[in-house]
Image (cartoon, rainbow, N blue to C red):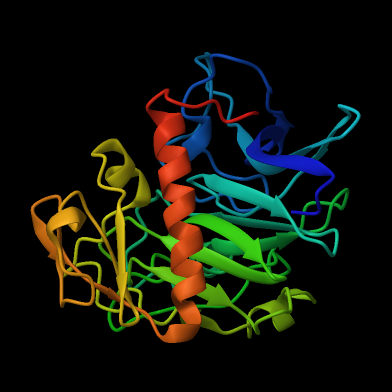
Length: 303
């Protein structure tokens, strides 16, 4: 988003859990995406090593951000978030900092153990949306830069922030949640509009996470939120507008815009927008239509 580089999430070998040597960074390893990170070693995680050996050699992998600049130079910054699962997206803000989303914890700690055990507390506070300083030393608990906190009702701690996508628009951070049975699968704004979250871990923990007006606000366990890519694959990417509402679905041609609902993948959908948000809906429509054509091979992404 700084307009000068592109960023990716990946895995970089670090010291193996228990003080073992640095883990290999190589092709054809096993279950690296479910490995522990070096500073958050969950003993209940079934993934102990990334390769077969006798005796077993424990491994651990940083969730790293790779940045490629305009001259093709590659730089990698290691982080300890997302232990036991994966980082899913990274973006560089106009302030020069990395923002990430992902999920952690594939271990067997119970819902009750997570908030009261040292490793459980580390896991709960190293997932969701994260901040990472380019070129910095990998943060370790309690200084992993998790942005904001969410816990709805009796959900499993740490799983309401099982985030997947993100973007920055007008210097504001937006993230999405679209899987899992905990929390609310929807689109969120992190922090104050026009200000990207920054600060120490204690400051980042206080950043508010709010559902954008018009997006789903009911529990994931009771509502199936259709992802953008589900719509693209099914060609359900037409959007209807009217009276502060827009809809998605191949039935839009027959749907009276401004009505109460539309049909998408066999179920009725509705998203309501205030007048101020129609511009976002229009931008979203163009984005979905473009990437739908790219996905189907009708256009080149230009990458």
